[in-house]
Image 1 (cartoon, rainbow, N blue to C red):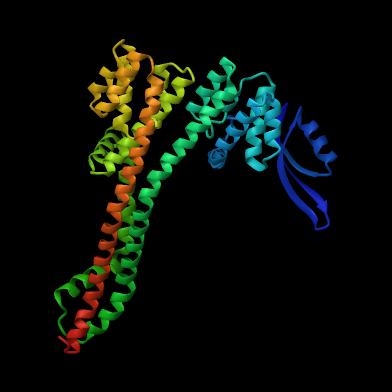
Image 2 (cartoon, rainbow, N blue to C red; image 1 turned 90 degrees about the vertical axis):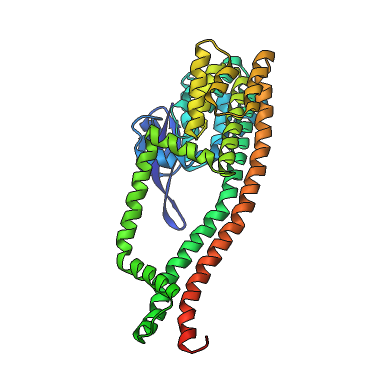
Length: 404
């Protein structure tokens, strides 16, 4: 059977109401017959082919469904643990969804019904299912423990989301304060300051130095604002292009790691995610080298990613894991020790899971420290900026009134 997306209309008391959805059928004609039997007036029926001929817009819209994937995996694990066959489980789950995500489930169901594996079906929709998901599901299917593999995958995705949210929560408040500060400053310099200082300038009296400085900045913004916007866009574009190069991106990531507290947070988050990924994969019987390869794609910092690439190459050459990591000089001694002891004892996945929990806690502590440090700094900076502008405007008024 294939999956077809349809647009149609249905008549009710309110008149002709448009509707859309997906349906599984042997052919387009069979799909139309089923829809007509449901009382729908068909406008269009299009076969959905996963992973082929998908436009950039379709890929973007599909990627927006990522938030529902964990729920899908959890439901599949729950139904699988209850000994419900995979096809029946997918049919049951599909009835709970509508729209584009129902189409995702139906495409999975269609491929499995045709004799393919669930991992192969997921690989056809890379916007939603990453390498970690594919490898764990593949191992689970081969070992006959798909429900356990899905449960491990759900646990990993939830911990990853929690870790990501902690970092975002630490940075969102300073970002909001900074944005508010910039907006307030621009408003004062382009609307308030020019109107007030125009009257004082027309009086012919000399302005205080601080007022002259603020007036210069205000006049510059009003006269050259379009050039400033163009310059910011050009600098941003050049910076982005530089980051896209291997040398520029590595240099920037190395700089980030050297920033106090923030660099520590980035390193700990990367180590926590790396350990979590490798522990999950190794527990699912994925070979170590493949686990390292997948972990490379989950580490955002290129310095740490390159260290894992070097580690993979060294292990391929037959040398110890700990020795490979130590030579990269990118990981703390405790991480190297965990790999050394874990490899020697045969309990690497257990020790990596413990390491990920430890660094997860450290990320929470470090993010709290970062927030506690940035909050007063940003508030003081905002207060100084606004106070300077206000003082520059008020001072000549006080002088003109012979108050001082």
